[in-house]
Length: 337
Image (cartoon, rainbow, N blue to C red; front, side, top):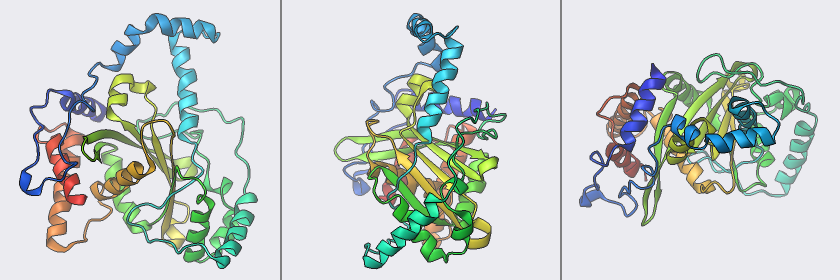
């Protein structure tokens, strides 16, 4: 039922822009005006796309030696899953403490990073992906690399939080399309609690002089690796291609150190040539934290009021409530700018 409500809400977003108006001039930012052409570009459902290109898909399946379109879909689903997990670099998450500029001492830390990470086991090459048994929850062979294959867990557990955080960031410091953060367990727990009942949402990315582009996000969990992953996809791409849509950004949270060290390690990747810049992904992550309650309780009475408004939007979207609108979403995003 939740998925049906979400689908209905996505169709609601695609309805002619009777629910979208320009914010009041008194508090308008240059980027706050909503241009509907970005997220209303396509309104066809995924099934109609398959029908439209059925002949081409059948020809493609034959070329690749596959019996039918369903087999082709499965083959490409595996490919997309692999692309989603290409996460081996990082930039700092907005709102997280800024690490010091690397110095000679950091070079020694980098050597420690290589020692801890190089001794981790290689990922298995014969794991067989399984279809998730429940939406939002991955099977035992999800394709996600466990933290034990990234870090030497024995050595990492002996490190103080400050050193572990530095090593985690240094590991991903060379890739400009990477995302990386060390999140307090309390902050992550608040987000996770909301996400399990509201695993899908939409967020805006402002573009100066061009309005805003809407992005669809979805949470998934994998018990075998003690992780949660958030997939970000342009809403137009998701509505146009359905299950064939490819996310432009994936972020994975590792909860291995949540209980004993009080932190959750996050790392992600912004895919190149998908029309999204790293700074756009950083904005989406900041919005993710705020809308999913990561910053609740800050900012006094006014801050709590804003948190309640964001919670309402999250609830309305999840339930398909007509009170949700892109205009209200943009107003909240404007206040965060």
